[in-house]
Length: 133
Image (cartoon, rainbow, N blue to C red; front, side, top):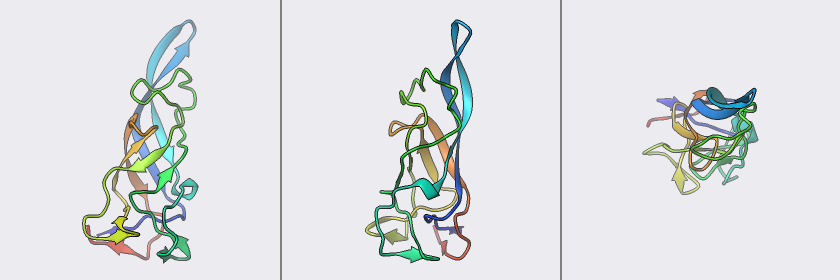
């Protein structure tokens, strides 16, 4: 059993987010950590609340992630720096707002809709509601 993701705190970590970084005259690929915070997400439903905050489902998008800010020549896979984050794997049994619920330890794609980094929700946003799968 894992915790459901809500609009409260939490943290999604993606690694490696390889971005091209200028080192002198040479563009160099460097791996960066990529962090997305569920508090910045745009929830897709407002009817199911946990601790007075909307629960997240697979339609929830975090419009900006951080950590790869110095890779100014973009990520080769996504073509972005500080791109959006979304969950790629939700709950198989719990649906919120007609879509699978997001959960802790769920796989995410970070730094773009064509994910530039694989990620996972590492820090729970609340510790009251648990999902079976």
